[in-house]
Amino acid sequence: MERRDPTSTQAPHPHISVMLDEVLAALNLQAGEVYVDGTFGAGGYSEAILQAADCTLIALDRDPNVAPHVARLSQRFGAQFNFISGCFGDLSDLLEDNGIGKLDGLVLDLGVSSMQLDEAERGFSFMRDGPLDMRMSQDGISAADVVNEFDAADIAQILFVYGDERRSRAIARAIIERRDISPIIRTSELVDVITSVLGPHRGKGSHPATRTFQALRIFVNDELGELLNGLIAAENCLVPGGRLVVVTFHSLEDRLVKKFFTSRSGQGGQGSRHMPAVAEVAPSFTLLSRKGQVATDGEVAINPRSRSARMRGAVRTEAPAWPADNLLPRLNARTELRA
Image 1 (tube, one colour):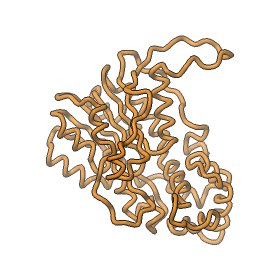
Image 2: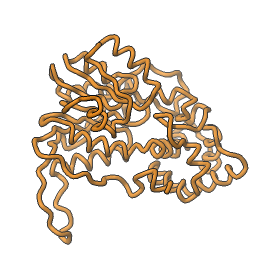
Image 3: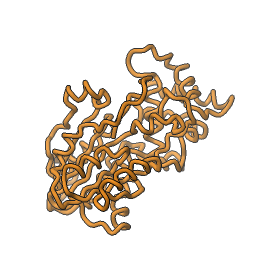
């Protein structure tokens, strides 16, 4: 999926799939096999996979606005390309509902796409005035619901946990004061609140609204919950030898993926000596590399959006899937705050 710098005021660039060559190599594409692109977006990975091997590709996306790209690939590749509307966190159920068996490979490219950032009406970008929405699937609670209905403590926790915003409490208090005057329903209105606390953007470094917008987007779309569910589903759906490749764009995502791969590959250590002994579990994955792979200097020069990307991959073993466990931070579900 292409990533665009939300601070950029330039016209949208053509779609560029991040770390495409590295992703294709990690998947080890083979003719006759079945692959899933769990984050279809504009179809960059899907198209490249179908061009590289005589295989079957299943694409997933919860954003209804991907329809034109789905139509384009359907016309070009026919029965080799199949699209299912839904979240990759529901992978197991989606495959079962559509009569699809085990997979030979799965790629997840996380975060928000340029397609979403470029559409002001989606409310993802603080550089484009629009409704304060941020919902990828365009249903459920919106960012406006959070800032206008949640209390200050919950808003601050969201900004701190999902955005690593050090001034989260001050921003939350400012949000409450502003919404007491009138509801915050536009992205520009929220930017005004944030800059009243942090100051205006001075042209260097990230925009002061970056962390708040990131935090709200992750929370509204339950991105970490979807990621964890998707990783667990992949463990259950991949054949032995099947490959899981994940491209992340910020530390929360990468930390979760790294922890999952580390534990499932048996690299997680033995835990505290004060804890009761537990039965050894056979690794369900072997790592393609112990360290995440980053984009080359050449790619970053051509596509600056790739500078924060990190790719991790692993190969499914013949061992049974591990019991599902919780790898998320303490604030791990929207329902925790909505209860």
